[in-house]
Image (cartoon, rainbow, N blue to C red; front, side, top):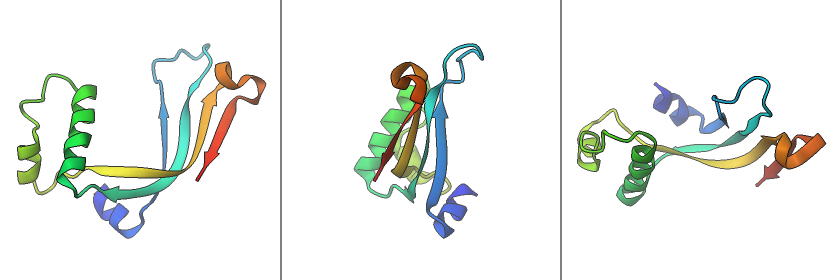
Length: 102
């Protein structure tokens, strides 16, 4: 479903944060905007799969590059950021965040 929507509108917004931070702790994370596209190059797909395996250890033998090639509904996407807003009060102090724009 997401792939069909991205095919019609490649502009996306996203956020990444540490969900293990307690409510009393200083927040760390980022919000961003960017352009999302399907990864079609096999070498780039392999890189994406390696990153995914690092985040999801223990299933490397079941979800392989060869398996992904066979599965018609499995695709890897990349986001090229155009705007990032970093939240890190510890790093930025009273300002609380830093901004990067392309």
